[in-house]
Each structure stands twice: as structure tokens, then as C-alpha cells.
Length: 204
Image 1 (cartoon, rainbow, N blue to C red):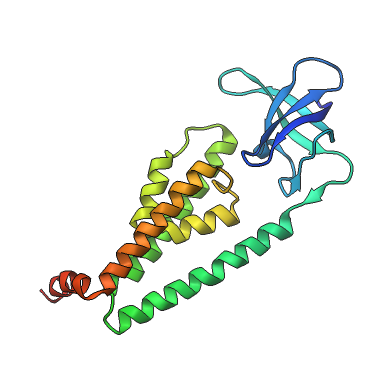
Image 2 (tube, one colour):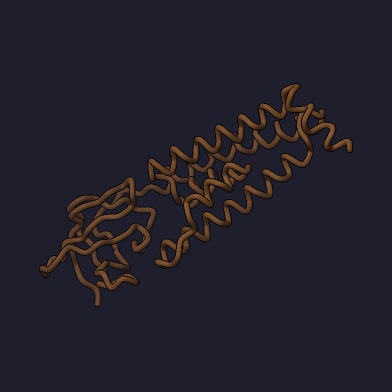
């Protein structure tokens, strides 16, 4: 049964908050995945309608949350952010392809990064779906390992296009370290000492 309430707390970085029912009672937890329209930004003291529910641990929460009144949309910001990421990543793969064509990198590297990026994007999408359905999640260590191995372009696309793992500061810090390490490894492979390692292997 739908109820009315008011947003009492909202943590934009972590994507959750609490609703105070107008009819009285304890505040109810709600996650951004419980909102009917996730392109809207919840505001403190904003009126909402919701349905009371419980999670897998039988803790009370709010679902089917609908914001009332005028709300700020974030859809245009998300699309701009996605475009801002896609263009540099496409340029990166063009550069890697050209470097492989002239023999500075093994030709398998761009192909491997492309396949890993697609797989990493899929894993992010599965993890986001699991978070919304309150199912078992993919360990963050697995996401970081995929990024370190070369799937970080796909991870970056997922973070911006799916809005998943894009606000947790600790996760983002570790993620960018995996990017730095992976890019550093590619830089080493281009160098003379690095080429002395992989060129004989491919020629063997």
C-alpha cells in the first residue's frame, strides 16, 4: 500500500537516504535503485510516495519511491559525462591500434583490451542489477582485477553510462591506481627494454 513521506536524509555520494513517513513511525531506508525515476535527484524535505517493504534480512525499507513536486534531473549530465568518456577511449584504441601496426606493441594487446573491456562492462552491469535486486554482489577485488588486466576502459564506460561504482571514493581511488599501473605497463612494452621481452616471444 502506497504511503506518503518526506526525505529526511540523503547521501548523494553513496546513493541512499531515509524517508520519514507522514503518518508517523520509524524512518525508512531507501536506495536510489528503489526510485521509479532514477534520473531525478532527491532533495532534503522533498515529499515522496513509497511502498513499505523489507530487505533479505527483514529490515524495513522503502521501495517504488516517487518524488513529488519539481525535481532536478540529472539525465543531461549523465549523457554529457558519457560522451566525455567515450571520445577519449575511442582515441586510445585508435592510438593502440596504430602502435600495433607499426610494431611498437604486440597486435594482440588492443584486441585483448577490447575484449576485456566488453567483459568488464558486462560484469559491472550484472553487479548493478544484483545491487538493485538485493542479490549477491560481485566482489570489488574482481572488478579491480579486471581493470588492472586491461578492462579499465570498459569499467570507465560502465561507471559513467550505468552510474555504477561512480561515487564511492575508496573504490574510485583504487580503480585509478589500476589504470595507472596498466598504462605504465603499456608504456614499458613500448620502450626498448620492453620490446626486447615480447618481440622474441612473438617471433618464436
